[in-house]
Image (cartoon, rainbow, N blue to C red; front, side, top):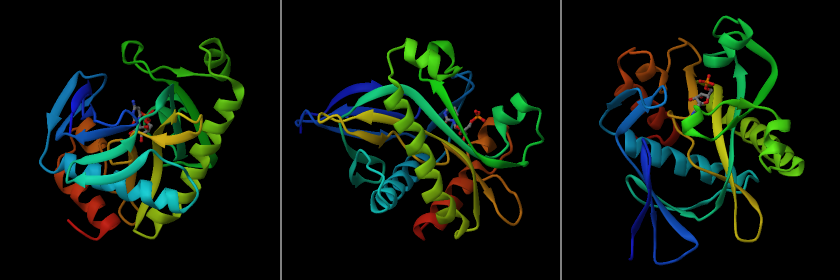
Length: 235
Ligand code: C5P
């Protein structure tokens, strides 16, 4: 079908297809953290991230968030629309953890008064720094686009928080990426998975996400399988 490798990242490959407007995202079992300084891999990771992203994109589409998702073609591969990606990562947080806990001097687990939205520059060489709208204006992202990105982040949060709550999971925080299709529409892109979200068990507080790998907590394969099971009802 004329597949051609466009990009090979830490955790996935992006392939061009015979259709210029369609891509394949193939998820790998490999993981990196801390700007690639820590490496690992575990069985089932690619399948979990692909299957879970597909489920999340379907659910979000049903709830009025437009996404790049077309279909899941096999265990580890999603077919998506080809987008012009914005150079921005949008992080939304409900509970203090990770870099926000450090930045504000909060204990991890402190609930936030209201969701906190943060903008990061998508640039591996610079280590994806936190930026504000003045920086992004300087880089050519206009205010209307940024406002739409923040709004999309909050809408994803409002939609997914209750979805996970019903499955016994606190959506602590997550990162999304956004792109523009050929008609100029902003669509949710990239992935929504335990690589890009913090998921804590509501009862026990147990971490069910990539922090188990980042922090050498063990049980990472089991944690990913557990999230997948709760989301799709399968292991
Ligand atoms: O590390 P930090 O606390 O800023 O991460 C916030 C959220 O964004 C976490 O859910 C993390 O998994 C996600 N994230 C990501 N990719 C990055 C940075 C953070 O998916 N490059």
